[in-house]
Image 1 (cartoon, rainbow, N blue to C red):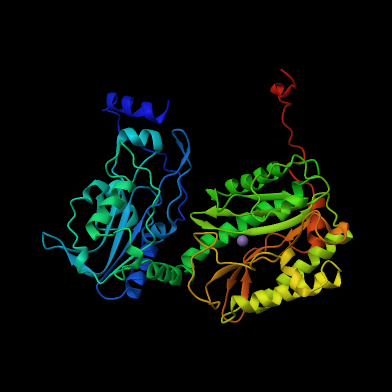
Image 2: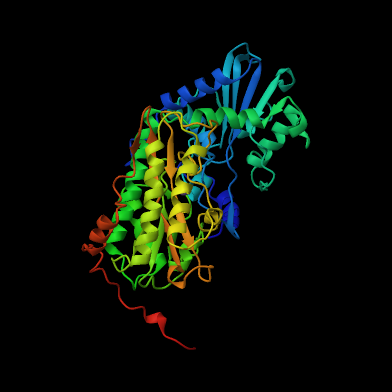
Amino acid sequence: MRLRDFVIVATLLATTPAFAQETDLPDDYLTPAFHAGRRDSLRQLMPANSVAIVWAYPTRNFSNDVDYVYHQNPDLYYFTGYKEPHSLFLLFKEPQTAADGSTYKELLFVQKRNAQAEQWTGKRLGVEGAKQKLGLTHVYNGEDFKNTAIDFSKFEKIILDRLPTDIANSLYDNADLYDLIQQLKEKAQITDNYAQDKRFSTALFRQYTGQLREIKTAEELVLLRKAVEISCQGQAEVMKAVRPDMSEREAQGLHEFVHKKYGAEHVGYPSIVGAGNNGCVLHYQENEKLHVENRMVLMDVGAEYHGYTADVTRTVPANGKFTPEQKAIYELVYEAQEAAFKLCKEGTTWQELDKVSRGVIADGLLKLGIISKKEEANKYYPHGLGHHIGLDVHDRNASTKLKKGMVITIEPGIYIPENSPCDKKWWTIAVRIEDDLLIREKDYELLSWAAPRKISEIEKLVAEKSPLDNFTLPKLQSAKKGF
Ligand SMILES: [Mn+2]
C-alpha cells in the first residue's frame, strides 16, 4: 500500500491501538546528562540576551511516495538526543517567563503521537516520551508552536544555522518542518535578507557548534572508538575475502554486512569501493565494476554507530600481492602519513601537517620520475590531508590548531589516472590510506589500529582464509539472456 492510500485508510482505522515496538535495544546511547551538558556549554558561550535555534533536517524524497531513510540534523541530536523529523528547538541564554509566571530556558517542539502514522513509520516519542527519555522539561507538540508567545524582538542576538530553503510542505500535516520554519520566520521577523541583519548570526551558530563539537567528550569517544573499530573490522574481513573475480559492489556489501553485524545503523557517507582507475575518482560511489581483477582496490568505508561516524580507507591488491609499481606508490603514501602522524599533538596546525605530508609525496614522485617539478605533485594528490570526524564525517570545527580531544583523519593519497603524462606502468594506480586519530596533549592515539596498513600485514591478511570463501548462492534462473 502506498502512503497516499494510507491517509484514506487511516481515517477508516481510527481505532488502531497505539503501536508498541520491541524493546530489545542497545543500551549505550548518549545519556540525557550528556545532552544537558552540551546545552549548558552552548549557553555559556552565548552572549547576553540571546536565543539559539536548531531544527530537524527535512525528510527527503527518494522516489514517488518513498522517502530516503531519515537522518537527523547532528546539531539537534547533539543538544537534545531527539532523532525524529519535524521538530524545532530553542535555547535561551537567560530563563524566560511564560504567561502563567513559570520559567523555562529551553523549548522542544516534537512530532505529535499518532497511532495511524506510527503503524506505518514507527513509534514516535511524543511529548511524554521526549520528557521521559531525553530529560527535557519543556516539550510540546509541533502544532503548539504557532500559539506559543515568544517575543523575539527583545533578543539582541538570534543564533541560528542557515535557513533551509527546500523543505516540502505536506498537505496532511499542519505542523511539519515547513510550517514550523514558516512560523519561526513570522514570529522572529526573519526576512529574505536576514543574512545582512546583524541581529541574526549564522556565523556565531557555526562558531559555537564548531567549538563544542570539535572536542569530543568521554561519552562521545566511547561511540567513536566503536564506530572506528567496527569499520576496521570491516576492512580486515574484506581483505581476507577479496578475490579478483569479486565485484566492487560485493566488497561494499561485505563491509556493510560487518558493520551491521556489529550493530552500526548506517554508513556515515556513501561507501567508496574502486578498483584500479576507479580509485582515482575521489568520491566514487557507483561501485559498478563487475570484477576487481588484479587491481588495487581502494575502499573508503565508514560505519556510523549511534550517530558517530568513522572514516577509514585501505587500499589492497585483490590478488594479495603488490606489484613493484603499486608497492612504490603505496610506500610513498604510507611515508607521507607517518610523517604527518609524528606531528599530531596539541598546537600543530593543519598547514604544518599538510606541508610535511605533501613534501614527502612531492619528493617521492620526483624521485620515481612521475613528475619533473615539485609543483606538479598536487595533480596526483589533489585533496586535503584530513578533517575532523564525529556526528558528521566532515565534522564541525572552529580552531586552526589541533587540541586535545579532537578526532581527525590523516589521509594522504596518490592517484594516477589512465593517460597521465608519466610512464604507462604507473597508470591506474590509486592509493589512499586513511586513519582516525585522537589528539592528545603530546601525541595521538591511533583509533583505527584494527585495520592493517603495512604492506606485509596486508599481504598476509589477503592470503588468509575467509569464512566467505565457501559462501555460494544458487545460480539465478532469471539470468537467462535474450527475450
Ligand atoms: Mn575522509
